[in-house]
Length: 228
Image (cartoon, rainbow, N blue to C red; front, side, top):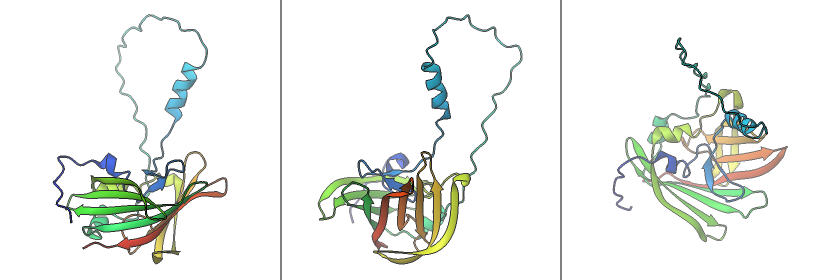
C-alpha cells in the first residue's frame, strides 16, 4: 500500500466526486458527480427582474427604518434518514476497500468506474478513483481526496418529500443482495433509484436514472473487495 502523507485539511468537496452513496454519471462526460437537489426559485426571480425590459430608474435611498426587524429564516428542509450511519460505513471499511461499477448511459460508451478507499483513519478516509473503457484502457485517474465519514453518509441524504423507500433483493454481476431501495424524484422530472446492500454499508450496488419513462443511465456493481 502506498505510504500516503496525511493531508493538511480534509477535502470533502473533491471527495464528493469520488464516492457515492448518492452519485450518478453525467450522460455527457461519464464522470461521477453527487446528486444535489437545489431550488432555482431565487435565480428565477433575478432573471425575471433582469429580463423584464423595464427601464432603469434611479431612486433616492430609503430613509433608515426606525424599527429593526430580524429577517425571517426559511424553514429547514426535512431530510429522509440515510440508509447507513457514518459509523456503520467506517466500521465496514478496511484499507483498500474497492468498488467497480459498469456504467451504461444512453447513447454513450460503456465505462467502468472504480472507487478505492485507500487509507482509513478514525475521522476520515482517502478516496481514489479510476475510469476505464470496457477493454481496460484507463480514461481518467484521480490520485485521491480526503473525506470525513459523515460527508460520505450525506451523499445518500435527500429531502424527505422527494423520497420513497422499500426493501427488495437485486442481482448484479457482483452477486445478489438484500437491499434498502431509495427512489428519489429530482428536479427536471428525473427519477433516480438506488439499491443499498444491507450487508455492504456504503455506496449503492446499483443505481439508475429514468426520465419520461425511459432509462437514461444504469450502474451495476461488478466487484466489491473488502480491503485488508
